Length: 268
Image (cartoon, rainbow, N blue to C red; front, side, top):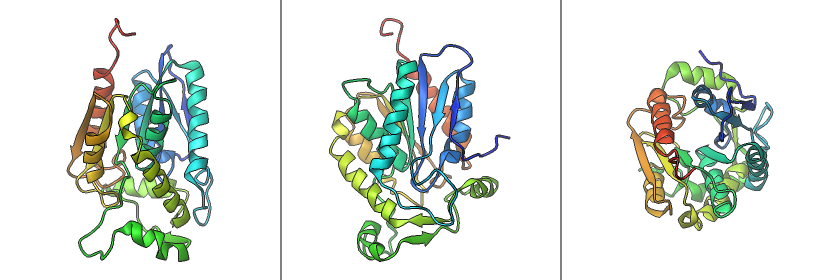
């Protein structure tokens, strides 16, 4: 069984591959969230890179503050490095990583366009329960400015074994609210550029996600400019779908989408 390491990785394809995958983790998480998918893509013959953003790249007693601009600079640099070796780059984003992937796609819509996007549990809105008086974002922007961190007692993974393995791999047991507010800034920016994104896109979202509102998947389907886009719904998983009970189905669906959206010989 694959060890869930939180160390960044670069898995070079054994044979020459035109395409590489860049994997982008979620807010407060790390590349351990993406490691199982990385191995599946590598076994399928692709080069795969996984990075940890600034503020996510070393164990600490509490999660450090960081900003979306810092995260994106690292994403952009890695993308350009991959593009020097591979003419085709696909990007897989998880949660806040989806927003970074979409910002990258919009920024490169005309030059070095992304081959395809795979968006897992996209973070556009925090899930609001019926007993909340206000949207969670309102609390984050108000009371959240008085609090630096909140404890993170459990990860949003229903599978108990994978939850324990991920918990041991995670660098932080707290959540930095300044970083969370920066993620909201990124969402607002990206929401104005969705129509410019033309890359074929697969969205995977669980109805039982306790972190993000599943309506974000529907919003992306309605507003993304891509002529090729689809959403795949899950019924059992929580937020970290690449490590939860339906992870094999998620990875199978991703690989099927990759095969389905390969350019024909006439387009290559």
